[in-house]
Image (tube, rainbow, N blue to C red; front, side, top):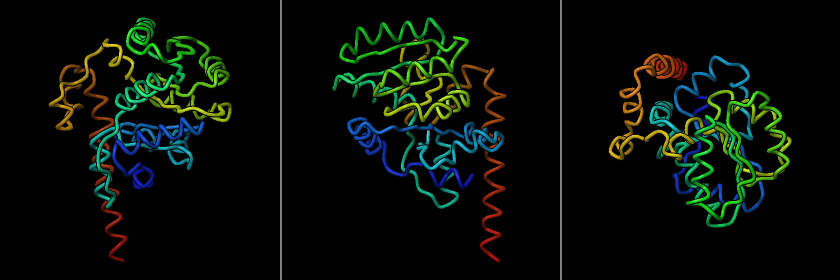
Amino acid sequence: MKIYMEKIYRKSKKEYFEHLKKRIEQEKRTFIVTANPEILMIGEQDKEFNNILKEQDVEIVADGIGVVKGAKLFGIEIPERITGVELSQELIKYCNENNKSMYLFGAKPEVIEKMKDKFKQEYPNIRLLGAENGYVKDKQKVMEEIAKTNADVILIALGVPLQEKLIYKNLEKFNKGILIGVGGSFDVISNSVKRAPKIFIKLNLEWLYRIAFSPARWKRFYEGNIKYIFKLKKEVKKEKEKGRK
């Protein structure tokens, strides 16, 4: 876990947004992973995904409060969470204000249609170069088509770790662009699913709201969060024992 924690962005949300805006203006290719405990646990168990997370050119931000607190156990200070939804919303706003281009890939057909409608109504200055749902059979072909568009921002909502693996596999085909795997963010942005109330977000209890209203998430929560805590404690203990020798 420590090897992941050491890579996570350690400045403020505002500073990270500014960093991304500069990357867009400089036409720099940037691949971002928004990491919560579940994602880091997948990295521990999936060799391919583990290699992606450790790749030097892959930027990682802390999507979950569990990651922020976990990093602190290793003496790594991360000031705040930077969620996939917030990143998506900030980039959408920036692209609209600066006539930038975007491509959306993922989610259910009805959700992607809602996203397209929302862009037309609320973000008319964005050059939406394409919007494809996540249920197409040939996802590789879609990625190749996206690369040809030269979009400034590419948001991919296919779920972890598929979205990250697909981005990484095709990364060299992109000359520029901010590429982010954003999971269920389209559901929230399109108002298909409500995000947790502000008080839950402020108290870093968004995870609690999600599992309370979706009991099916309990198993996923256990696998990705409870096991994560035990894994962290075990690794921190080893670190301390190593330091005593």
